[in-house]
Image 1 (cartoon, rainbow, N blue to C red):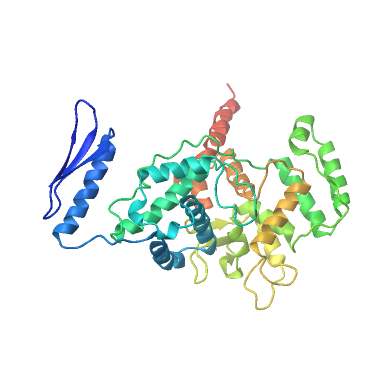
Image 2 (tube, rainbow, N blue to C red):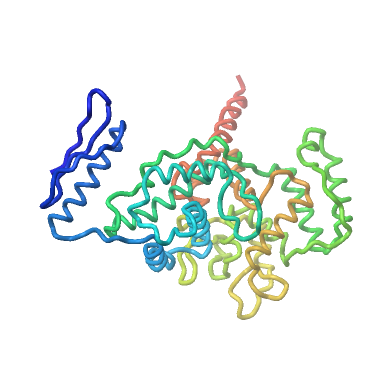
Length: 399
């Protein structure tokens, strides 16, 4: 039998229980009723094992992580597992060099609260690059807690733990999230122009002059947004074949980087003008499965693209092999830098696709389906764009 009670004078909660065949135990918990309730659940769980004549496994973190990796890694993409592993590396570094010898039962609420404070004060794994670790953002810390909680759910399922200590930690208020950015019509024109110049192997100085001439034709407000300080070097930046087509594909489909790089000819139905992102033998979509209609100009460019014999991928590098993800990201980032677009990234192409749809009064559930998001809340960042244009549409009334 086990129960909790509160001392009225000290307002301290106590746990009272009697182990099987043992003497009565009274344990001081503290002033938190929630902590007392959790302690009660834990001891009741342990007592149920005692009554059944079974002991809770005394598992170390090292053993648990090894088993977790064996069962979980095959289900995740390489990129997702690297992200999981990076989070675990932070947590292991926080626990110390002998983390693998720690018992799972030693992970409690206090340790996770200390971990949150540790990450927020600029600590974490540096991946051997001797770089100072910056304070983690609230969104990053919340994501790390979610991953660690998910991992410890397995420990509970396998009866290594009685409860998940990471679940009870309150998530931080995300007040430092970077506002999303999308490209304006003028910026899209600039991106396409510079992509064409790169495809024609123009030198950086020529590209710089073309950008200067482009922004000079714009009004002062747009000029302020577009122009940032850029060091000019007279060399030819690295670029990949059909780079302009890739830029258009990103803008017109809202595809993720992996969806562009993994795109195969069999996924395209150019007669119907549709690309299908569905589960394949060697590829799984990150979000929901979906079909996206292609604009006529994009269909025309894809039809004119020369296919490489024996190569199912659509977009290839100069050697005829699939473009490596890092090379792709660097190439797109170079394009943005040459256009001198501040605070922009590869993911902003996807934001641009969704934002312009929202401004064209396309319903948010439709945008959600086109982006492949599982949760409607993910596309709510575009809601204000849609509302602004709905409000402005009232101005067309003739009375």
